[in-house]
Length: 220
Image (cartoon, rainbow, N blue to C red; front, side, top):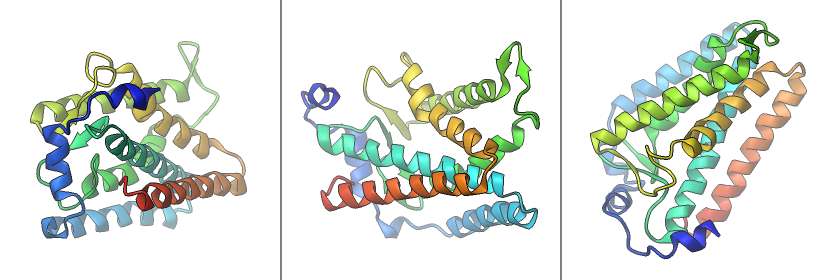
């Protein structure tokens, strides 16, 4: 139903055209990307050295959740022939998808580890009677949406639809970020390493299937 409603608007927006113009254009590459990659590797290397597999797997889980969102976001652009829910324009070393730059992807790789390191050690602790995990999920999600709002004002990040903008932030908080942080916390708190690996592996499989499906359809 959502696609049917959005399809009424059939003209590509200017941000959509700008993003498609540089989509996966290797000539945009900048050397700072290599430095960012090394920093991401360092963050994970530190956790691996400490055998902090809970944080490593939680970080990967959040990153994979973002990939699922980004793939579906790209599919919305092609389904509506107008715009994705969010679009990225401006300078980037590599635009992977219309809403995902290489820099953003690396940021999400680190974000999950940052998030779980902020969680209280006692998963049962309640703050004002509320489970601490839910409070931190909400806080981080609201902070992320606030940062997105700042990015919108730069003119490099774009929201197109009335139900997904600063006047209606609830869906962005819930589906844009809360699901990411909730899954990261869930994986982090699991008592079974095998279960953690199954969840992360399942998320990776979903990403691969979505990439193959929409990629072959030309919707990415």
